[in-house]
Image (cartoon, rainbow, N blue to C red):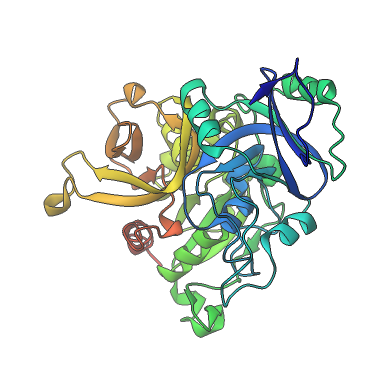
Length: 398
């Protein structure tokens, strides 16, 4: 790592990461050329890089992969979580690995270029991760130029001028803009793909879930279908009246990017009306945070966040019978958290992180409403958390 007073590029450097404090990190660029400004975070998962890059929760972020060999399974059209990538770029240790998987359709670096996303390889990702752990997630600019020509002062200016994620409502930027019935299938099976809805039982016999899309991953909708629901997806700013006109048996609050307090300015009043109407609610990640906000708790920006596929979460709170204390291996992606110290008496804490003790689950006392901070649809356990979809859908009337 060098600083702006020594900007000479090493030989062969075609990629650069300029942190807002003036730190310069050189590497080899891949993917799309150009530059992008965002928050640098790290993800500890060994697999799922294509899902990470397309997860809307990563909007505004540049992802450092701690696993050194990225690209080894290539990319394919099934392993995406949205219509287009939302992470701004990625930082990796080794050059992109050649694909070696029977499901591969396109090398990762080619896919990145076609999707307009910037990558840098040849970076000491361990040192960068340690820096984020110690100093927090920095604002930065990532850039790739095949000629290795960079205006470092200009890039530094962009990094310093960016507002950061705190106070930023990104949900309305990544949400779908049309209300639609989810018709893109249910559970995936090798050789069969995603189960077509016509193969499933008639939708008229299924409880109707209205899913509010704050930046949802597709696999959440598939898991709701797998658990037995008919799903209608609505935009982030849909009103209480519009939701109720769809006659939901329950309402799902999705994951998404940005500051939950900012998104909550329009989402929380709607959730409060749904709570007052005693509509069953289930929230994941951002949806969990806004459910907590609606019930009177507060959220905080985390120092480094939780991002990876191996996060241990423990069941707590006394409501679990023989599974009290059981640990689920979960997938996480969040830079904000519900502040446990602010939970009112009406909220019962149900899960906590075994990494740092932060809140990972709540239930609203006297209501059919609960949420978890992690991603049960990502299947890292692989089936540790599917019970949450069954609990939600199983408790709905048709």
